[in-house]
Image 1 (cartoon, rainbow, N blue to C red):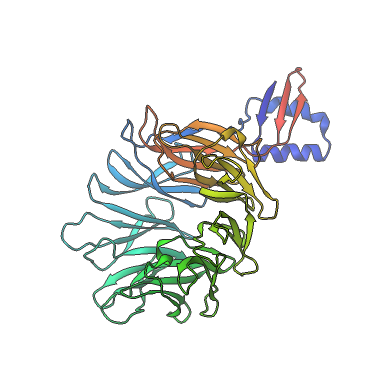
Image 2: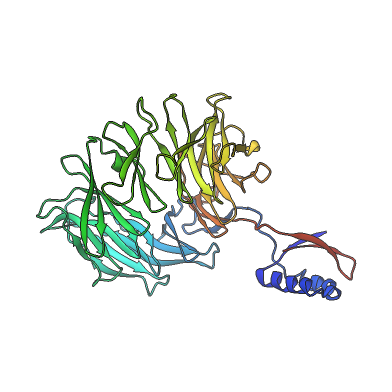
Length: 484
């Protein structure tokens, strides 16, 4: 018996046949497509292209999704370049050779905008001063071009914090008259400039973080004094101060920040609340702490956005670290499950949360894969076959999620669709220590991997789509299983 997975066009044809009940033609049609059908993706890892042949590897990095293709930096035998790929060897193309075999060239952020990909390059420093170059591409070598060179600076870290908001890039850059301040770019020379001198004069403002919150720009500042939270008014091109924190560690800068439901979620240690969850709606009065531990620090960790809510691990008055969620209000901040302690990884998948956790009823070393819908009684363990393991790099595609189980030479790549039955081993994946860069693009998972024949290269897995299958007997007596 043969199993056939049809292209979308062939599926539509078959659906039309079935809908109109042209059953008399089905046998002949099924026999005709046997030799031309494409077989189903089966989660088999495929090397996309051996960009740098041999064991050296091209070391793909900084992957982003732009219009269904992955853009990344990689090195071939000529040097580091900007590449793109659709997951096939023929569809993998170098767009730019940055600096031919020149040590010291720096490739910064890749940011997918609505109509172009923005990136920053720094040629090797030939003198004390460094000048960063701003580039864009729309996906062809001809469209890949430098459009602006930032003012020279003495420190490689001065130009940073590149953040995409409403099809513009905001960032910190230094100039002789304003110091380190807020700049903006639309990907053209004419649209790139200093936009706000928050602390007027040649001294820098202490701009240390930028956040996109539903199309609005928030800023964190720290110079010599306390941390400050600001919001940038793009219409009037002014920055407005929201809150000054008496937090000497400036926790808002050093911890992850999330945006959900038009709110900014962050962590701070101020106003007597200890290390706690904070929320801001962009107004001073709407910037508040949500304190779930009146006896000490709640220390929220692993903040993950699921819909308009944020899930996180936190410690309440019992001293136990468990799973929580918040909609930005005190009443809407609730304990989801008091039975588990979330560990290394959390991710959103199909409106639910998948995460690695320890159940209190088991050993402290018994880490398992869990899923939660955020409701009481809606948290359960899945992936029994994975066993007890450290899980990293939870990454979603259209209809599945992937993760690394274990570390070092014993690491394994797994996939799941959110049930125990759908959780399955894919392949051994070597030399993994901690989080690994992986990117979901449509129903494809892109990641870098080395094996015995290749160094670190770009690999792809195509997630099998959910199918409806039925057997058909052809005129020659062969039974063919057709999957829609």
